[in-house]
Length: 335
Image (cartoon, rainbow, N blue to C red; front, side):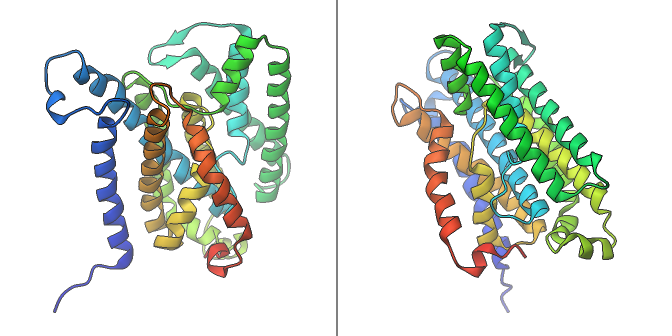
């Protein structure tokens, strides 16, 4: 008697195989396709392009996509809303404000493995996280609605400050701010990937560890409490872990939209709503999606490059409309 592999496990295996294929193939693609024979040749030329530029960029885009996707999945579970994204609580606006301040001040410095603009962006993200958490704690407990309203308010306020800074900036500074806000992955070497990896890895481990609690949170806070879940503690841990993960990604790559909304939803349709299987699927799919999108961004108008945030927005816009207009119960059922 043959043993059948469950459908969900089959989908995860397919995603894993696709991930390996994407990580192998996409570094070879670009304005010039690099042959496999050139990878282990003498230094210089195609070998340097692959090992110092393309492979680090692919690794960075995969880590960023995986982090954004799993962050969106967590926020969708906490808020019980499929339209929630990693940027719902204003982390991206805080990081963008930090980057805008750095550009407007005309600063030029760097830390080992981290540019000055990334330092300011991460500081802005941390500031946003602290303010949202502080505003939420003013009220008793850790209310989801209060957290959501605080995040939206901070996001709008920081966005208005960014507009003010842009208006007061000269043409060069204004252009740099706008270009950063589009979201792009331009790296040389593995420093950016190494910077993000600890935050994404730690956040991913926490999400896996609390996947059962996420399943219960989708059923409502009262049911979660009756099943023994410390709701406020769980939400606080997830909030800080995921927000810091998003902050590190935005600090390096800028705000790349729609990945955190599309990837969890697509995987939920394929895998189901059980976060024990949904989390790994979302991580793999998010990494694949952003890696492929970045490959398109750097080859579509070669030798010039298009910000990857433009590509994800071109895909995410129609997807968002379809999600809003769909009347299928399976689309909106979070359970």
